[in-house]
Amino acid sequence: MDRDLMIGKLGKDLHTEQKAEILGALRKLGEKLTAEEEAFLTANAGAALSQFESVSENLGSGYKVLALASVEVEKTKK
Image (cartoon, rainbow, N blue to C red; front, side):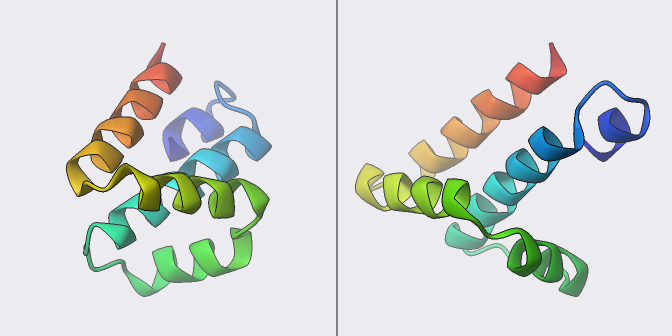
């Protein structure tokens, strides 16, 4: 995603939203985020991330959250 932002394939707002969603999902799955990733997440936690986290809590399975994040990543590649 960072590469897509640099080459202009992805807008800054969409990049920020998607990166925050993915990092939030990884954190909920128990992944250890780097200090840089945590700082990004803290600085960019907004309404979209709150909604994403709310939905992910209702899914009941970490695998479903990961699958959802994977689908969103694949969408950005197209």
